[in-house]
Length: 88
Image (cartoon, rainbow, N blue to C red; front, side):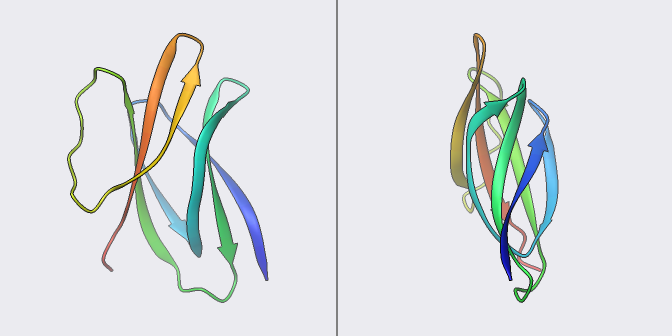
């Protein structure tokens, strides 16, 4: 069975998610929080995904295998979300 799950992220931090599916989008703030959504597939193998949230003008964590997930606006602050799937 497939479902959409939601995860809360911290600004300027790295979060490790255990997913059975793919990260879809992080293009929204909800209740003052940065959110990322993923399709959860009960039949898919579990994998670790590193999600980095970086503010505009802040240090960029460079990882060539990272993919851009989205930009989130929290009032006057702008954050950018990147995801990297661990090879394990």
